[in-house]
Image (cartoon, rainbow, N blue to C red):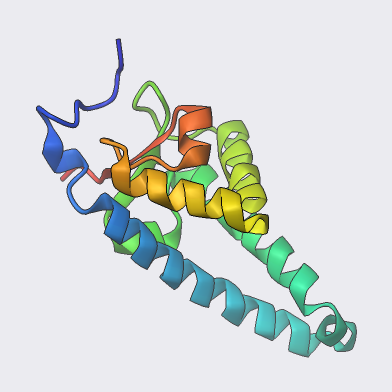
Length: 142
């Protein structure tokens, strides 16, 4: 028995989540790119390591925000949040695993494409990492 809202009886929790998730990703990407640009310009060596700085900043940003509030700033702006299989906020360990799964999926085009397709066809809008970890993206409760 699932402790998550039923997508048929409580569809409001899942309405528009996939699109909001995409918009939140865009917001987070811009924030991470801005932070990367600042870090790269204040350190001379950073200009030669922009991709590594971007990956590190992105990982730390996502892990810190998911650990503290179960949502990145982009997700908060879109009024969505990640929940575990019990409907609880993500623990720091589960947030770490979720971000690690995201990084792996983003590093491989095929896995990322499968994950995006799953978000559109799964009743709960879950991506591949969500399915593996049992997490789900929900509209934030009012």
